[in-house]
Image: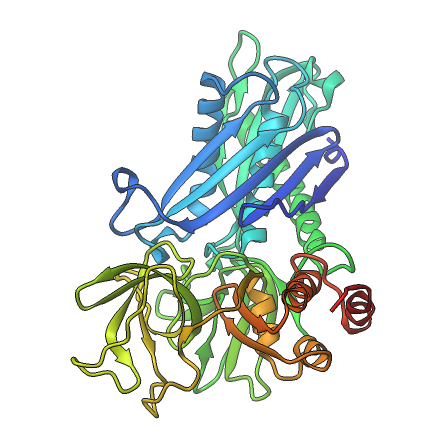
Length: 231
Length: 234
């Protein structure tokens, strides 16, 4: 099973936004920036909570249907961790830029996991939006011989028969047994075939274990450094 | 006080008879036992508490201001209404400043602020569902105490943590600059600092020093800042 590819995190401090972060699994990288809460146009205003808007910019070409679909996915994964009722009638805008191409056209889950993690880090970096947990994501795949691989790289992605990305919200204050809850997954069969519930649960638990390492890496990247983070 | 890094969602061991929670902490019912409550962090930062453990808060930096009552802010007048002004304080909504909320103001003797003028005011009301309200006098004494219109000078943008550091009388930067040339400053908690000095090059030197010492920008300490100031022509 193993662990993910080496994780790289950096906080670029983009000039005109409130928070930004870059996250990479190996060489699959994404950059996220967050602005808010700020003024919202009247049509998008919500009376009792903030409007959360996500857009994804692909590596090349203008944003297309796939970008819209990824944006909707990331929105549903991140939204449970935000406390939007503290800032009604404002806008929180998340923009994600992919920094690397997907390994194979059909396996985009590694990039999706990197985008969700970059978004969480940008939200933590901004510090102006209250959150109830941190969403961490990782991609898991099952190869032809039945092994579960965490964060498959380019070579292994081609051999994956079932796979998907799992996103967990990590919050130990919930008072439940485990401190992470699954908020989103897109586990599916890559070739013609089916999978059963046990296989999905097994993959989810493998992902839950690997998330601990992702969360620990995120936390240690936040510690004040001489020339880095600004806490 | 050892400060530990907390992430949103982590429980904080804050228990006291007179517990006061500052920014970044929230009290909520525990899911497993709704009759009990626990204190949870809502942002990422260093957890701090006062010596007697009654006041707890999370210390972190941010660029976007969210108003809280009793904070002093620097605003720009954007609109004149009949009974007051609309002021931009860097928040999602414009704040309202009543024309009579100045020291010694009566219906006959109201201050005459133009659109685009700067005011140093105190946030008197900051509720999430309402527009923030400002006042230009101190709450207890009803006197100006430095609030009011700021004439001349220059406004520098900085991060919120830098503003808090500048307000701390033990911070090194303002005494260091004030030792070189006479300087007037007003520090707004909304990430804006107003500075006024005799010559433009002195104002520029102050602006560049603030940017250099800002934890979000250069993050210089006292020694580096002194050396940096020497290189500037002021």
